[in-house]
Every structure is written in structure tokens, then in C-alpha cells.
Length: 202
Image (tube, rainbow, N blue to C red; front, side):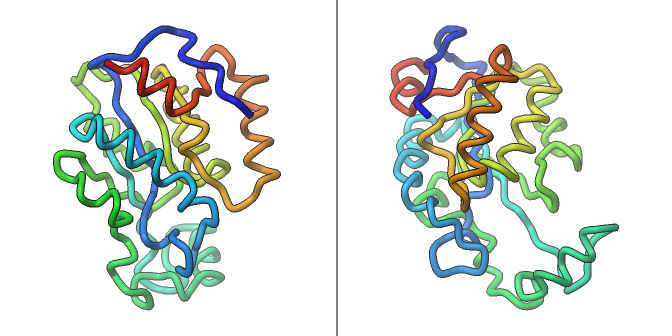
């Protein structure tokens, strides 16, 4: 689905590029490979290269041991025991190399659940800042990006979702989410192409 453009006007110093979980863990050949990740990576690199000091990368950190985590997360990490920290190469947690070179000046935020908001660190990082718009990229459309978008909406941020810079493992649910944003969140989510952001963020 094509982007709608920056319908609420250009972006400025109050915008932050929030890139979700573009880590080696999700690269081709790795335990949680996201097939689309290499396709969207160049767009994310392009956006980051122009706004590295206005970029924040999140990283998903698995449980330390199989069965770790509260409640249903324990069951989740029994199912995904081979992706716990005790069993994987620690470097898989790192950003993909094409993006790691931007941090610093880009900032990092580690999280242990899908949403970057739940553990409170992102609220602290943004508290007292002038940021009121989030330009969101990364993966996956229907999991961690979704959790990021919904938390941003709840907090009243302007949400700009870059359609050619987000990725999923499943076309069907990616497409369903894009339709959802258009039909149910049209006042709160702007779906845009990368070029719209590059042209509209001065």
C-alpha cells in the first residue's frame, strides 16, 4: 500500500527517527530471520544517515535462560529456548552492521518485551524533550512495530510510519496492519514513503 504523504505538514527538530529492532538476530540465516529485512535496510540506512543524531534504535533482548520471563513469557522462552542469551552468540543482539556505525550519535534502547514503552525507559528518555513526532521504521510490522505505534498513539505523539522501511515475516498480516492504520487510525498515523520523509524533514 502506497504512503499517503506527510498530511500534517513537514517535520522539523521536534521529530525523532525511532528504528525498531533491526538487529543481527533478525538477519537472514539467523534464528529469527525476517525475510524482508534486507529489502528495507537500505531505506533505513538512508534515513539514519541524514538524521543520525535524531535517531533512536531499539533492541529486543531475549530472556537469559529457557523458560525465563514472567507469566506467558516463560512459556514463550521454553518454545524458543535456542534463542535465549545462554544459547546464542551474544553479538546477535547487536544492530545490523550497516546501522551500528551510526550509534553514536544515534541512541540505543534495550527492551525485553515487544513494546519499547512498557518498561518505562523510553518515556524517561523523551521526558522533558521537545520531541512530539516519531518517524517509525524497522520490524516487525505486526509485532514490535505495532506495539511501538500503539504506545506512541496513546501518548499523543505524531506518528509517521515509513511504509518502505518496515518489514514483516508475513505478507498477510503486514497488509492487514497497513489497512488498519488507514481505516482506523487515519487521524493519528501518517503512512508515508521514504522519499516523502527525506523531502519533508529539514
